[in-house]
Length: 216
Ligand code: MD3
Ligand code: FE
Image (cartoon, rainbow, N blue to C red; front, top):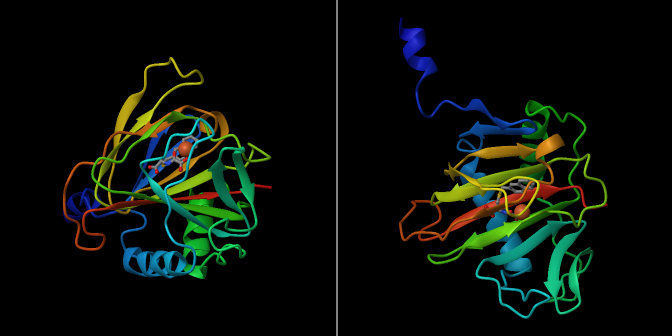
């Protein structure tokens, strides 16, 4: 009896399949959230958050930085991964051990035991920030998954199809949720709706999203 009850506690991490190739591990990063945010803040102290310009000249509403061997950048020249941070002129900060460990452990639980990320994008959303529907296709080999970790305020994720015109479904992503996006899900269109005002004890008015990738 009591076991049934404990199985359903909302704080208990559990699996949910969104579709073929996409697995949500609800709450899988809650226990480590303090340590993860500490690591994120150390990265930001070295390579600050910045709002980059798209090749079309629009300033993104989400502020970003990166850690690991490669970082993702966008400017008038296009989208790409590179090993130097264009703001500091130095290599990106190394990927903190606690971030790397969480990414590898959750990727393994999601069916990718050999995943070793060489890039971690850190997205910081403030109220009003959003990310339009897009595909992640600047990585060399799409057989590697992407692992995403949500921290702080909740935000509604839009999960589309293989074409931009496919009607997206809405999935709320909460503090501590980890999603492994591989296989058939890897090239699906996706985005997040505008962040609403709120307060989270760990992140204040913000939502952070970490995406772990194999760029090369
Ligand atoms: C599905 N980030 O950084 S995380 C991105 O909440 C990005 O910051 C969003 O899209 C965010 O590129 C969404 C969930 C996510 C990340 C990568 C995916 C879903 C994905 C790649 C392929 C399919
Ligand atoms: Fe994306």
